[in-house]
Length: 416
Image (tube, rainbow, N blue to C red; front, side, top):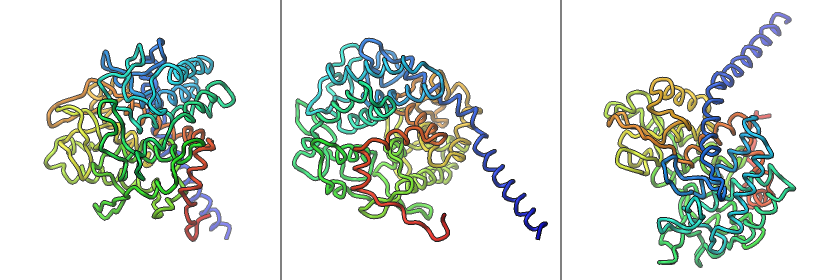
């Protein structure tokens, strides 16, 4: 009996050791990637209004979604002792004061792209509901991190003045945007995509909240591939399975609408993305080298909505892989490290991974996009510490949304 118990103990110890080794194998690599991604937001932050550009490209305007990722990046920087907490506080406060008092809003929503120096609308862009949501999500993390300060007060004011009902445009699903020249755009958030974060904020709001019925109004269209069945977006772009998940902790909860487990769903979407590329390695050099990761990014012919089961031409988006580290850390880390080791400065530069590359065209992007750099940073940090999930899920408005739209994941027999 003693020998048997000793054998069991050795087995358990070896198993635990193997898990620790697996968790720490890429820690130094993650340190490098996270810090370089952080530098994008820290170094490109403009002191004039506290805005952050869409891209590392010279002259790029501000992307309000990139600002949201940047606010979180600054808080991550404090946690890693890369920057001083008081300096971060001052930077975030300046940014939020700009959005509260200087940047034009339409019923509380902001224009997608802004002039870095004036905060005014550029490119005749739309008032964007999803980009406003991605900005606000980052602001909420900052508010919870600096709870009880002016930062929290400003975020509450920005949140409370948004008229979510206006964005419905008398329908049951939210509109994607509005322009002063044409009014509401003809496109709505009516099928699965990155929009879960938008509905979460709109339903959880203390003022002007939309009814919970709107949560059930959009379609959960399912795809079948390689023996997997999962909720998917029309383009198959992997970022749609990542952006909302970087903030909302979907682990251990399921959709009241149809029981979907969105955390597991994103795991499947990530696996399908990989398998889709593997099955086409005879035709595409990028895939033949073992790389995968299809998502919206800059390709040889410009920005495209690449995706598994959708349009593809061999272009790889490193953010597709990096953004899924929070779902499948070992798988994604191995692919990122391979890119880093084998392709070097062709795909990895000052601010981390470039936006895209295509070996078939011998083409490598020469810029970084804020939203894609941001999702890599947030996903890796969530995988390592759960930092973003921890602070975002503390917000009472988000808790309201979870209670109204989700159930606890059923306990499987044998689970503890």
